[in-house]
Length: 58
Image (cartoon, rainbow, N blue to C red; front, side, top):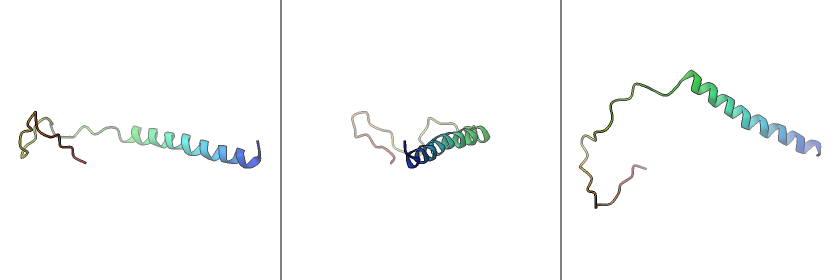
């Protein structure tokens, strides 16, 4: 392998594994939020008809 290929391999490994490490650290510091409101109800929205079109929030 040429030196350019080795350098590119090292850079790509640092980017991939570094991103994984940063993600893990971020999740450990700030885990999933537990203060979300209770779910289940859709206040203010009309009831969906089972035979009607499906609407997605995008």
